[in-house]
Image (spheres, helix red, strand yellow):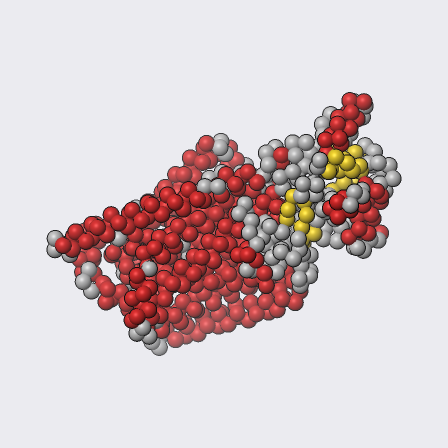
Length: 247
Length: 389
């Protein structure tokens, strides 16, 4: 039973209580100036964006098959069975491949720090493993951000689409995007109008590199035989040439 | 000699300016972090320290494995005289790549982490291991030069005994990580501009690395012949240029097929920076390809040199396109390197040139072949003269 977050943009009132709850959970400063920043960064792991009269939340999508975890050379990022994608800063060497690989541009870096870490939402892994709500879901006064089991939330989202077909764009963002995410979005308008990336592939991204990486043993074994063989042939030829006095 | 002196001082002055600015930039990097020394951002996490210092650095050092394969595995002995400079370039190249990485990594003190903390699903993990192992192989391939210099015959014998498996290992490791630098970008299908994003990116990276390795060998032979007043191994280089022309033709043909199979040619009608950068990159590869098929070009040192430089520039353009400019539109941001990024990159290049010069001066890099060449050299020249026309 993998956990997930359902964010319903039609219910969101843009109060930014989720931002404040998130900042408190991470021990990050939060004030009017930071509240006005409408983008996620190393000091703001979730953000409410305004798109005309609509709102949209930005946070780590905690993908089912995360690109960030697959590319991390030291395994600092892991997808947990609980759902969250967690980060172990003590392993991270700061190559920032996770940032390059993330199709949602979520991971942020502490650029001005001398000993920097990557920062991203981890869907409150610690709180969740104690059975608590995520800080954002707990803070939301209107239920726009809801935490629960992914299957249950998906069923609920479908129910909302069916109950009020005229109020919703009839799709759920996060069902099949990059093979499915642990954060699901509902909206009144097509998703690109509230700033969600709709051009992301529908297949899990780790596949793209794994298709090549899985060939490594084949390349090494075939290459050894081939190069060894070529060496054997060409040097035999040289030996014969030497014997016959051609050199 | 008198005419040469002022020329050298000008270069030395430039060298000093580059190093001083690099030193200041290093101070910025150490005390103000990546934020204080680069124009990188959350949306654009990789800049020229990755795209040039690492991706171009590794590629430009590919002459090492290409020539080792030609001379020792395919047994084309005539290229032996240019093998050592190629191995030295490769060894220096990889060392400098590691230096570049120390600047780029957020936590350079953890450079060793991938060797202990494994994630076999990560391309970067594979590259880290291959580069580490291959640098070791290059070091061992270069050791005979040191042993020869100091007359250590026992270790020389010992290292000759393991040289064949070592060389095969080196070629395999190079094949893996040269292509893997392309695989790195397969994870960003929606970010990398479609003129460059293709599932066969690893193959393209591999073939172009072989090409640029050959071009760099010609480049450095030309320079060292001027620096040390040696005669240029023209027939050899002309032979190498022939191989280069074929490899480039194969490369350009694969790229043409790839674009046509992906129906990407229509992109070329769009007036965007990507189109022009793509055109530049292809032109810098295609023009020398055509030229190098002419024997008159191959046998003229100046023309041969210009062709090699074009290939090197075309290669650099390609890697910068894949590593930076081709990602700008998809990342929704612009990236222009800060002066400090450029200063450090130039310093690394300058240190590379200087170190090569010093080592070539004090170690038997060029002289050694005159011995080994003694019995086969004459014949080789004749062979080539006929072959080249």
